[in-house]
Length: 99
Image 1 (tube, helix red, strand yellow):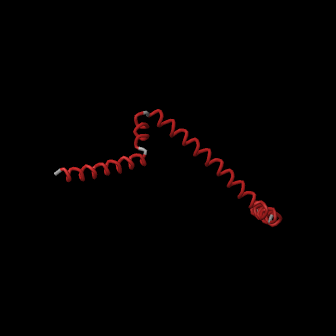
Image 2 (tube, one colour):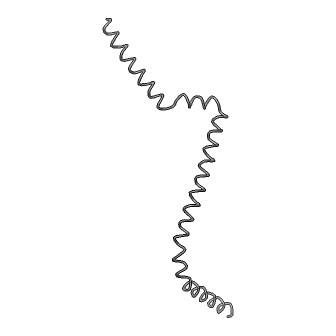
Image 3 (cartoon, rainbow, N blue to C red):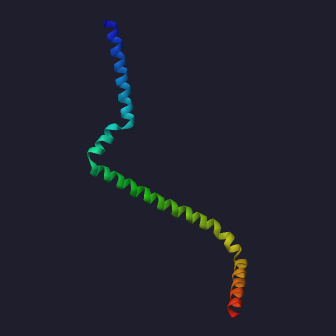
C-alpha cells in the first residue's frame, strides 16, 4: 500500500509542477494583478494604444514618403503629356459650354 501511495504522490507532484510551469508561462499572476487593479490595467492599455498609434503614424509617413519619391520621376517625365490631356479637356468643356 505504501508503494502505491508513493507512486500516486509522485504523479501528483509531477502534475502540480507541470501546472505550475503552465501558469507561469501564461503569466496568470500578472493577469490577476491587473484584474485586481483596474487603474493599472487602464494605464497599461493607454500607453500601449499611444505607442501603437505613434507607430502607425510614423510607418504611414515613411511609406507614403517612399511611394511619393518613387512616383515622382515617372510623373515628371509624363508632365508634358498630362498637360496636353488637360488642355484638350479644357477645350472640350469650353466647346460644350459655348453651344
